[in-house]
Amino acid sequence: GTGMMLHPLINDYYLKLARSNPGFGIMAEKLANISKNKLESLRYTSPDYVYWLTNTCRLLFYCGKLDEGRQLRYDLLGEVKVAAIRLYQNRDYSTSLKFCNNYLETKPEDKDILFTKARCLSRIGDYKESENILNNLVLNEHSRFLLAKYYYALGRAYIENSQNSEEHLDVAEKYFMKSIGKNEHPSALQSMSELLYRKGKLNDAASFIERKLKDSPADPFALSIYADILWSLERKPEAIDRIMEALKHQPKNPNFLFRAGRFLQGHKSRAAYGFFRDAIRYDSDYIDARLSIADTCLDLNYID
Image (cartoon, rainbow, N blue to C red):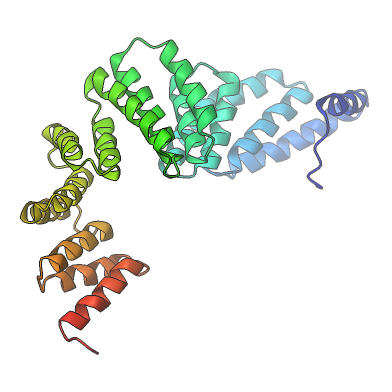
C-alpha cells in the first residue's frame, strides 16, 4: 500500500518464508478467486487489465493451479495483443506499453508487438530504446514491405523527438529515404514532404507529396499538406482547390476548415467567415480560429 519496492532477493526471501506456512495455499487460492473476479469485471482495454491478469496467473501458480494459470494466460494473450495495438491507435501510449511488455513476456519475438512497443517508446520520448528495437527488427527482416515500415518508424522516432534539431531532422530524412527506396512507402512519402516543407525546400516537398497522391488521390491529409505547400509556393488558386477537395472527404475537420478560411482570408474572400465559424462549431476551443474569425469580422464590419 505504501508503494515501496523491495529488492528482488529480499522479496524472494519473504515469499519463501510465506510459502512454508501451512495456510499459504489456502490464502493464495482465496486471493486468486478475488483476482479472477476482478479481472472478469474489466474490459481488456482497461489500464488495470494487465495488472490483474498478471496477478491472477501468479496467484494460481502459488496455490498450485499451474494448468489453470497457464491456460488463463494463453487464452487471454490474443486479447492482450489486440488491446496493445488498439490502445496505441487510441494514443494511450503508456498503457499500450504495459500491454506490450506483458505480452512479450510470453512471446518475445512477436514482430507486431515489438513494433508497437517501439512506436509507444518514441511517442513517450524514449526514442533511443525505440531505435534499438527497430534496428533489431531490421537486422532479421527480408520482406521489403516490413523493412519499409521499420525504416519509416525509425524516421518518425527522430521527427517526434527532434525538438527542432537539424541533426535529428537529417537522420529522419535518411530513414525516410530508405523506406521510400524499399517500396515507395506512402506514409514515408508524406512524412518526407512534411520534413522538407519544414526545412523550406518547397519544390522538393511538393514532389514527394505528389508521389503520395498518385497512389492515394483522395487522402485528405495529403491534400491538406499539398495545399499548404502550394500556398507557400504562391500557387494560391491551386492551394484553395486542394483544401476544398480535402473538405469533401472530411467536411467536419476543424483544421481543414481553418486552413480553408485562412486561404480565403488571404485571397480577400468574404467566404472565409463561414469556414472559421464552422471550425469553431466543431472545435469550440480552437483559439486560432476564434482569433481569425474576430479579425474577419472587423474586416467585414461585423462589429457586434
